[in-house]
Amino acid sequence: MTPRTPTLILCLALAAGAGIATATAAEAFRPKQLAPLGPPPIPPDNPQTPEKIELGKLLFFDPRLGGNATVSCASCHLPDAGWDFPGTVSMGYPGTIHWRNSQTVVNSAYYGNLFWAGASKSLEGQARSAASGGVAGNGEADMMEARLAFIPEYRKRFKAVFGDEWPRIRNAWRAIAAFERTLVQTDTPFDTYMRGDDKALTASQKRGLKLFAGKANCMQCHNGALLSDEKFYNLGVPPAEIWETDGMAQVTFRYQLYSKGVTEEMYRSTKDDPGLYFRTKQKSDKGKFRTASLRYTKYTAPYMHNGALATLEDVVAFYNEGGGENEFGANKTKLLKPLNLTEKEKADLLAFLESLSGPRIEMEEPDLPDYAPLPLQTN
Image (cartoon, rainbow, N blue to C red):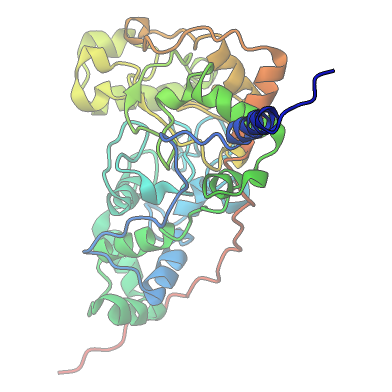
């Protein structure tokens, strides 16, 4: 046998080293279109302070910021239910039923388009819209402001935080938004992995990440640090079953059609949520909804704008089949096609999706301050 020369040994060593490097690089696959989540953006006109955040926390849980003082932000965004509502559609104002699924407020600080159709551009605007919406909070600004004035603790806190002589309702929304900007999660296994720790993901989750970026084509819409492009798509999500089985839900749906100014023909014939069309009145936008972030989804079932999918397994199956069918099928995105994932691939993809959630963000409901008579005014 011919003895190996030093040159041959060196070549073999380099080849072996290249193989190791290639394997390591494969394990450390990190798509450039994804990124770890950093600190949330803070608007310059509403800077964070500990006092403002604490005031916002109280107001978030206080039902007096609503129509009949029974519904708070936390009524539809429950901490122990993923900071959203566990039903297919959210709880409505007493005597009504909502028509869409509540989204989690965790990481909502990063969105530029809030609500399913992007109706608000800031957390401040979102808080105001939710508290005053006809089937949500149903609150009147002057009444809510008057209630705050009858609570000495709030008068004291609004004065200290905003300089208000009497609590101003617009500052209540600013305080709630400041609190919500603390409900972020940047310590998921995915974030740790994207920051350089190769051991943060399991082998199955790493395979799922490759599927997410490749064969499953999830990254086409779920990209960036938030894992959402914040664009609007019709995925073919079927209509909410509750509209067919619950009379009050049907009333709410018809109210939405009427109040948002659809044509009489559409009012009488539509059986599905028009989504973005409500805002644009463009036929091409019927059935479109904003891409939801995949972060914290481990705790936020059910899924989609109407809660049509009960589990993350159902979500993976839905996309594997190329989406679904709804009334506005002509607008269904061409991005969705059958994926032909194997059972093992679906399990790996699901494992990766679970890596996008860290520990539950838990919080006990705070003790709310009491009413008291207004102080006498003397001249």
